[in-house]
Length: 269
Image 1 (spheres, one colour):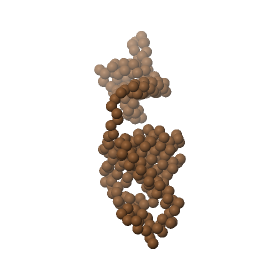
Image 2 (spheres, one colour):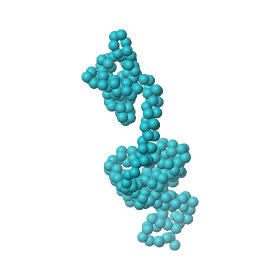
Image 3 (cartoon, one colour):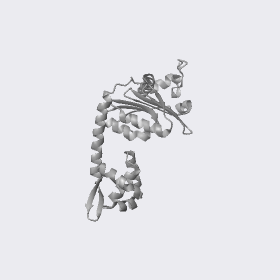
Image 4 (spheres, helix red, strand yellow):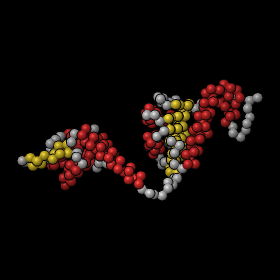
């Protein structure tokens, strides 16, 4: 439990020593600096410096006693509320200051994602940033990593549409199941993932059978427009298939093979 607390606090910007000493104070208090050093495993030469930072950040109190100073922690509920308020105030100030900067116009970069973990992390950030609309086309293997987040954003009023390959459960989300995922997998040599948020940012990726990926993220208007059109046109076709599938089968053959042949307008006569 303590190890997990330390890791989570470090994600918020606290040092390992600050995190370990605060967790140790919660487990036993009041304590002297020497006792805290022994309990937390922090060198005695560093403990007063660490305690000073805890006092400055309002994570601990100092008790003046006859035999010397002892320390107690600020309770987690109060600490988290104070921390949250400070962060919100700081972010509000930064937002105002950033808006006053007169930098050069935005340059459209295309940035590669260097790992599957990076791809999932950027995808989650993209979903969380959506203000009005979000489009995604992907396989269950990838979408399952952020299915709860997608449903949550739909509940917040963000318009969502998902083209999915394979079975998936996304309550509250408009979903379109693609009927020829096996054919597409063979054609592409892997699973595809395309995301577009607010028609402003996009991610495109191919996840290959050996686990390697080719993926990129960008705000480039051409890149975003291509990804946006790709998903929208897939949805147009899937709507047509949903309502006119039998007739299409008679016109284009099994699995709509003739429809997928873009170099010919051949149909079953």
